[in-house]
Length: 265
Ligand SMILES: [Mn+2]
Image (cartoon, rainbow, N blue to C red; front, top):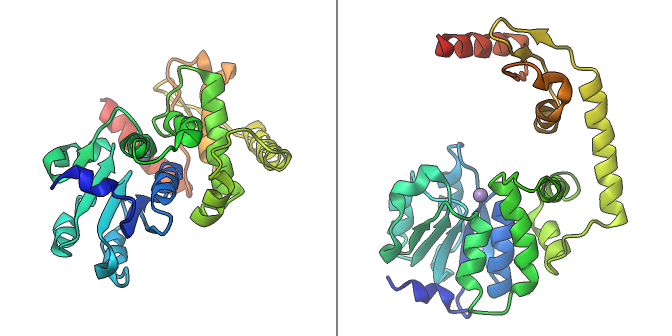
């Protein structure tokens, strides 16, 4: 399969893409190249991706299926059985074994899915207005923390996708098709509200010292942001090892704690 086939902008494209910011960023590129492209959201770790794929109506209308930021590792045969030319642009380490450029399956860990999609299509149409935005998505998705100011801005863009656009692909793409990366007044208001919420949770955390030198705490909401706050806090840096556990139930916390302690022995 000549991979150049997938650069024909007149094709009718089905884009199966990861459900997160990187996945929607990938779809923004696809949608810019193929304005009539349809998408299906793929969720790693859940069994329903094959079901989602199988229930996409009228697949025979498509000239190409393009997977972005996602590899149909468990149902590649089902995809091939459609007979529709298929390309994969992904960077997940778990999919490395599938890398097969001669069959249009590109697994490249050096860039996020949206960046791989951008790089692949940048010679088809001028999409340079999206480059900066895709760069921030790459910073967030690959957790590049060399420039903290940049990383924090990338986190804000991710937070807006989740909280302001509620993971809605169409709404996010409509808002970001111009490639802007600055924050609007409304964005700032949304982010301020969340920061206040995280501050409240963080300031009320209960820490229990663990014999291993870490701490145990519990957080049922905004655990990612609270976890980052704990990692960055000077208060806990003096501990030799910070072990953060969050749990829906106390029982789960205890089970995880026991597992960690067993693994350390
Ligand atoms: Mn990704």
